[in-house]
Length: 225
Image (cartoon, rainbow, N blue to C red):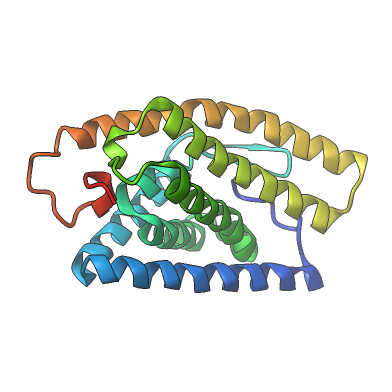
């Protein structure tokens, strides 16, 4: 999901700075809420694991350019379910920063665009999860349908933001429509595969339920709200 350099540039980048700043502020709010229930050591560890995971997803797993962006297996839902909303958001941003700084510096001009594209759908997923997942159900007990809804919401949000940036930066034209359409079709593969990966990770986490893993994962992974 790296939007190609030049898709948004010049004065139009001001919107990306604004949206990224808003995402940073909301991440801080989520972090304060998380720290009220956990501790700084657990929060830092979960953020570090989310950062490493994000780097692996972007740099190591298969990815390929399609249309206006690149198709990645982001596994944002996995990070959210395992680590919690705030560590997942920080991990996505920091992982993207590390990957761009050391391995793909050509992507850095689009950092704020890409951060917005990754984080805002995560916040939407967090809000929806708090409403439709029963309070007495731990995340390791989610069914495929639950995980599919979350993953589809997140990945759909990513595609929607990519489309927005493309039309905002390049204008509404046949070429932009074609690029966005091609990217959206390719991303359908991600929406199909990621829920399966999420369930596999949750199944693995479930085997650790009776073991002492306090602090390694979000409290909601094993404990109902």
